[in-house]
Image (cartoon, rainbow, N blue to C red; front, side, top):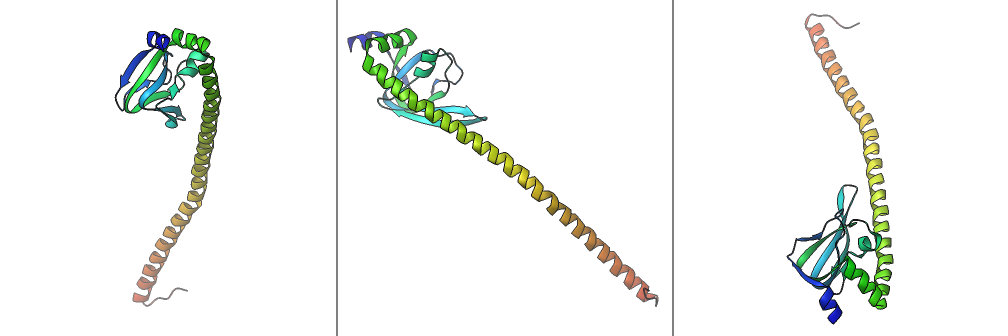
Length: 175
């Protein structure tokens, strides 16, 4: 605990505040002490929910382990208090505490599966959306043509009746 107190800083954020943003350079690993942090990722132009971390949960490990920017956005859904480990302290934590490393890598496997499943689902929904737009277009074209033909026929019948009435007033019959 003394080591943690010497290496980690406490962060407090209000509900709605962003802890880190997708695409930003990875700076820290966080452990939720109190409150709740929601993780979202932009997929297909839409913000997609991935996970919620409450007391005891953690986030930010993936980019620190891979040397990449944050792959998602973390926002507080309630006033929250977190422990913040910078990259050096995080790596030292993994080296000093194999139990923490085991927990992190187990969670990492599950998180990768969740992100992959969410992305596959979004891709299927996008494909279904494209299919429904195409189907609606194909169905709409014949329906629109039918409406135009019916309107055209209605107009011709109206004109034919008017001409027949005009002819009958002059004592003529169509023939």
